[in-house]
Image (cartoon, rainbow, N blue to C red; front, side, top):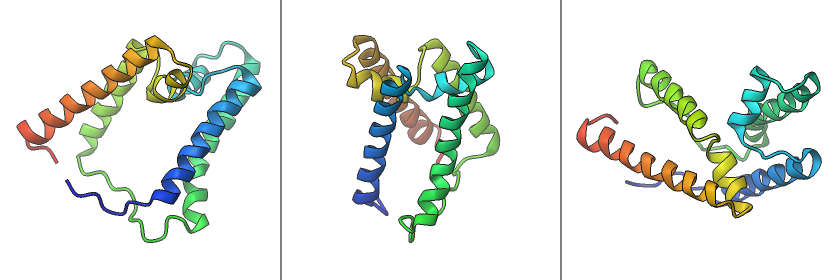
Length: 147
């Protein structure tokens, strides 16, 4: 595997912004920045007052990509293009959604916020995420030949 377009400064800036946003949400709302939980709270809100901050957070995620591109930091980086078929992407998305429900959280909630809080449950979840990712890549790329 060859790494192309490695951009350490934008990657570092992105990591810092993710950490700051997670810390700010914990400080301001007392909530963990787990994206599946935030999105799920829009679909199944705990209260009407609980929806607005979630929508703002999700809008920030979407707008962040556009802001990054407009900032000029993304110059020279090709746009993202899926290398698999749409049905495979849909199936993958559904499996991720099911996994976040089974694992009661996602990679952002467990892997970023949970590990930062030294949660043993998040450590186990993150190890499971990584192990399943390794197995999935091995099966699809090396045994099934899917690129």
